[in-house]
Image 1 (cartoon, one colour):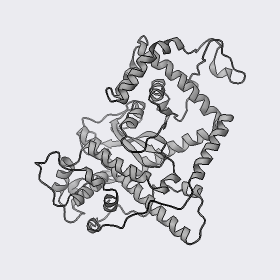
Image 2: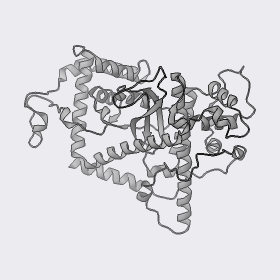
Image 3: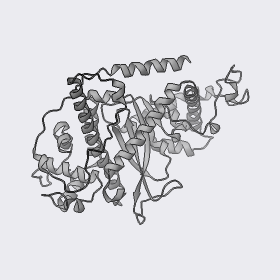
Image 4: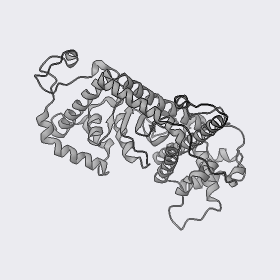
Length: 425
């Protein structure tokens, strides 16, 4: 935490809400310690027993008064930007794709804000947007049992980092027609992992459309036809709604919830439904015909699952149970965890790059494909338990080297060739 704070200076994002608050004697040290304590989900008073020179009251005060959700988002973006400038990050991706998925977080049973569902016990969902470079772009804390797909777009729009993905992968909840429509109108290429094919319908562009080899996918001729006249008549209104979402006048999650439960007689709902049917049919055909695309989708969704396990490993305190009852504090807890997890990922990436430099100096030939199989979610070298030394808070590390003499363009060229082959097929 100390080294990443020196290098990236994410700690400068934090401070009191007004100039009247008492100043901290050592804001750097207190912000680094507070992020560590809250990110690991240790209580401030319990953590103070293992950290010399700090009290539980001080850690609690700093977390409540000097950290906010907005400031935590900015600090997370600082680490994302720094990670994107590392050459080694190109081994895992180029930042153009993101995967969204949630993982269950336990809360106490007597927490009035906890919810339950068929899949989960009492708690909530930490919903992450993970870049193809393995780092978290944005994190939500959402109710347990909610329709997760409504938050796919929300995280993309709230991402303030320099990494701006255009392709979005998700689990099966991303198969919804309204989500496909809104993603397309906002310029995102939504490609979820497709399952439950029997429940998905392919739509024809006209009643006369027939196909030689795949006609059976579309069902009976003359049925399941797109209403292009409806789309044309409502398209101006659809774009107005999309612009309102992009500019923040309306929440994408609120819009998608309304579209999901909206009346089929409502013209806006039916127009969104028709656009979503068009886009989803095209994406389903792409998914069927493009084997490399299916592998990329599977790899992306596996990556977010790995991040979920890694972030929970980092947040080991209190056995992973959230003790806060305040929804704002619960959201902050997720942000703290994302910030700490990103800091560990950033530091792991630098450690991997340093080892690669040593191998290059010894004459080894490094294949970028080999580096692509090395994950930055490394844990073996980290000791989570015991007493936590604070002496490095006062030691400024040497500047890190973001450059690495490895040609990662080969990985991107392979992706383009595979995509071209799939398209031709």
